[in-house]
Length: 82
Image (tube, rainbow, N blue to C red; front, top):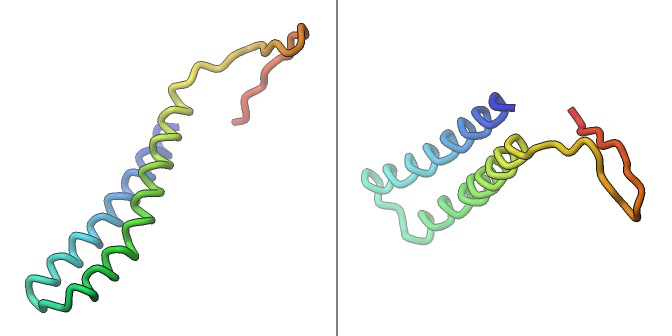
């Protein structure tokens, strides 16, 4: 659903804004490189997983559903989960 893609994208933007704010914090407070690296590394996996989730959701939505699947010479009706 389009709404789910928008929701995922908004979540990713929110997570990226947190990372950007962390970099802005550096300008004012100048923490150590180690502290900065730790803070950024903590937020990056969530953003990456969100982008992967968004990609798979978009592919799933654009996929054309098959009505019949053939297996070993037998045709099976295909029901797509909702």
